[in-house]
Length: 115
Image 1 (tube, rainbow, N blue to C red):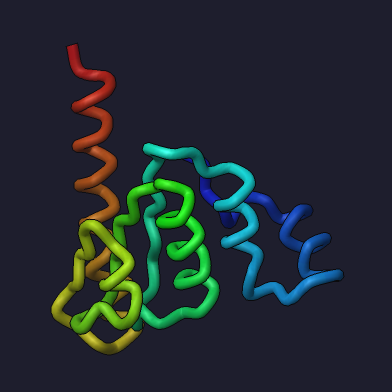
Image 2: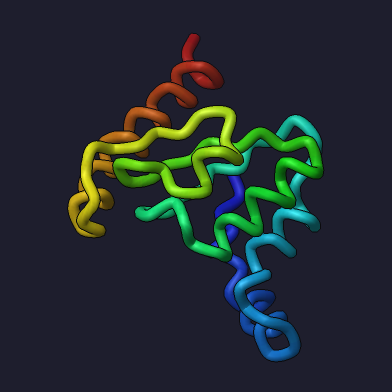
């Protein structure tokens, strides 16, 4: 797993010369490979920086898993699977995403590390 938010120096350097809305898309282009999975989080499903990364992912042959609020926004159409929690308020969407993160992590651990 590679968290795109963890590239602070690159993100800062990129934003100095380019529109920062493209940062995650640029990282997805540089790091993503066919068959990888992009997990895209947006409470509204309409965050432009997330949508751009999801579009790049699709063009590069990555799968996209979205975590959003109730409606899924524009992100929903870019995902193979979009987990839309039944809330609209940002803090409530984020609270409901927490058990999803933990469940996904446990499922991955079980798949890759169970004996």
